Length: 115
Length: 112
Image 1 (spheres, rainbow over the protein chains, first blue to last red):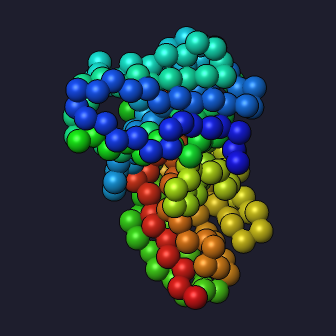
Image 2 (image 1 turned 90 degrees about the horizontal axis):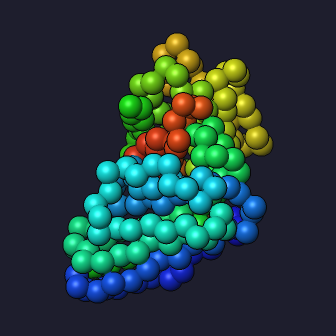
């Protein structure tokens, strides 16, 4: 285990549903990330949070809404998604303020299927 | 921005053989190059990393080499075992960017 947990592990939702993904890190880190992993594509960075503040939004559609209530928890709220949003959503954390040379620790991911 | 290309996309080797995965990057300012291994149903796990002040790093059967001039780095796995079968990702980062840029991954299959 990496110290980063994600729930749920699998999620099936319709295009009109609203759901949330949860990530929790037990490592005392200050930076957290959301990535999207689609088949045969590189990991796509979605959002970066440092000390609960969003520092990067990688042109993500507004149907994805992140929330970081504290340095240990990160949520991704989903609404009116499209089938092409089906993917593995990975959460990661790193020690210090999101600097790219910091080692990132990944959770197991949430496998999302949008029907 | 940074662009990382990774080859090959799939690699099949016999148990005991060596495996080499190569990545190139575009941003000469990149100075941190981690490699991640992702097994089925799990998130990526860091297996080794290298910083731009060294040319090679080794950890048991795994080694990484870096050529800053050519802007490429490679992962070498010797004496491969079936449990090495997974998807491997390279990435590049530097202090000026907030997050890593990942390659597209290499699916390694070690045949027993």
